[in-house]
Amino acid sequence: MMKKLKIEKNKRKELGTVFSNTVMLYILQVSGYIFPLLTFPYLTRVLGPGNYGIMTFANSVMVYFQLLVDFGFLLSATRLCSLFRDDKDRLSETVSAVIQAKIMISGFGFALLLVLCATVGAFSQISLYLIFAYISVFFSVFVPDYLFRGVEKMGTITYRTLIARAIYTVLIFLVVRKAADYYWIPLLNGVSNLFVVLWSWLFVHKELGIRVRRVSFANTLGALRESAIFFVSRLATTAYSASNVFVLGLLFGNASMGLFGASNSLITNARGMYSPIADSLYPYMVSKKNYKLMKWIMIIAAPLVLGGTAFLYVFSVPIIRLLCGDEYLATVPVFRAMLPLMIVTLPIYLLGFPTLGAMNMMKEANYTVIYAAVFHIAGLAVLYLTGHLYFIPVSLLTTGSEIVVLVSRIYYVCKGRKRLREGKSND
Image (cartoon, rainbow, N blue to C red; front, side):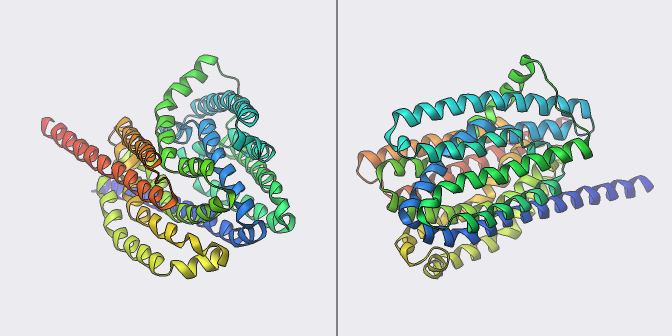
């Protein structure tokens, strides 16, 4: 009886930790929406569609470089840190190997950026802005969020990031006063990211007792191999996210891209509200495999998601007018075309690494994104060849690509459940 009570107490404690981490990540995610929401109407008006379009295109380029430098470590290293959370020596080794690998990758990335700025017209026109933007990408090398997630110290990420975003927001209002000041935006972002690095390592040294040390080249290569499949998955994801902005930015003017970028930013931020659920559940599911919890989350969230999406569709005109200004009302049809993404995102997130990862089917989770990437690239090619590569068709194609992810993940989850049932019957 006492043993049973102890088990129940431990389960409640574990779920309490998941809930606490989810709340912290939601605070983090909401801040990622609120702070940009404060600067978004200001920047769209001060910069105008032209310069806002430049910022949007440059940000889409940096997504690729950030993706390259991250190399999937947020998933692979989080898993390792979760498994070795009580072994400081293994944690130090993991963190050190990841940092060394990221430094190598960031050097390659910067060299690649310089080549692109020298050879590609769309890059050379804004080369200084791109170089400034790369500062934040480089600082991200030293941000050990995978460690905090793995040992479930979400509060550290939350408090640190809230202050960094507040600093960035205040600096935007103080420094960016006219359209020509848009060059300051990536530099101010770099300042806030430097704060993140300093705070993170103060905590790592003082509270976790982890020290970075030099590890062998073999360990560094091992970290890269471990994370390669996750990198491929993240790379495939950009085929129908940042790639849309990148491809359209090569074909359309800055003003048009400013309009598209406004809708894309709003939808991306709104979809980001789902990620704390999946992010907080990932390390928990790896160790506890509580699949019923995933089912109940989706059942409870479904009516809320559908109602929220309907609200955004009906009130899209006043929402765009309030957040962006009258100059951006032409983007309303694009905004509405992107809204179906709000419906499919949560089940995609939950059925991904929290569920398939817990089933030891991480490769399958990555395959689903690769399938969608192939579908999306083929779709972009068809739109280009038929002369329909415009904003609304691309938005609808993106929803189609996400549906490919959802359907294939449902298939693999069913396959995984069947395998688990067969394993239990054999036992």
